[in-house]
Structures are given as C-alpha cells and as structure tokens.
Length: 147
Image (tube, rainbow, N blue to C red; front, side, top):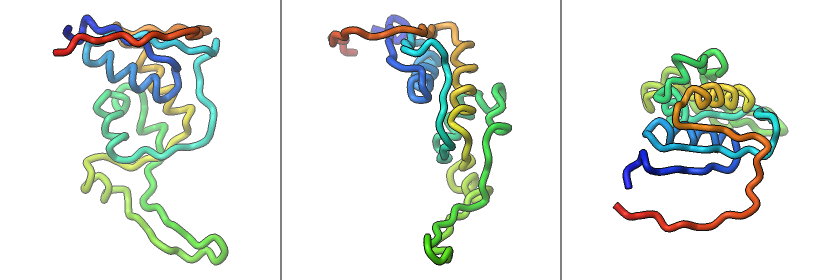
C-alpha cells in the first residue's frame, strides 16, 4: 500500500488534529477531519512553541504564507522567579541564542492565532476535507497491509 492509497480519518479539528492533517496531506495521504462543532475555532490562552515546533511550522510554509512571525512573540529570555520575593532563580536565554542552538526561534502566541494559521493552511490542501457537525458514533479497528 503506498501513501496515496491511504485514507485517514481524524477526530477533531483542534490544533493537534489540524497539525496531523496538514502533515499527512503534505506527504500525499488523503485526510478527512471530523469536527463535532458547527464552527471551527479555538479559545483558550497563550501557548509556547519550542524551536523544534516553530521549525516544523516554518517548514510547512506557515511563516511565509500565513504570517506566523506576525502572530508570534519572540521572548529574549525566560525567567523563573520566587513567588514571594520575586528573586530571579534561573534564566534561560532565547532569541538569537535559540536560533543558533536549535535552528529556529522560541515563540509564544495565542492558541486561537495558531489554530487560524493551521486552518488557513489546511484549507488549501487538495487531499484534505473538513466536516463540521460530524460525530463519530462507532469506530472499528482495521488491519493495515504491512510494507
């Protein structure tokens, strides 16, 4: 079985589901995403993107086409402080140092912004469909052919 014959069903169009769908469709796998909500969106607070995660998003073209750098913040450092005295306990330098060490930025951004970037990219993939108001009522394991 080659990848183009593969048909993958993903439950959920959150950040994880969309990221998986995008990764699979980019290598030629036909993907259908089922989302139980009638709207596609993400709430919540901020999140942190390690350099390896940010690098993958860049490799997927989100930095060039979908304004990843405009949506993200790039802290120069992260500090751990004592909650009662506010004394700095440790500090991790980021910024250019993260790029030098890991090949990509360390970034922070709002969950909704990352979801929107992924959704915009997913919608442009020819082998990918998203179905809203969809519920999975039962699932059955299937045996895949080995290579």
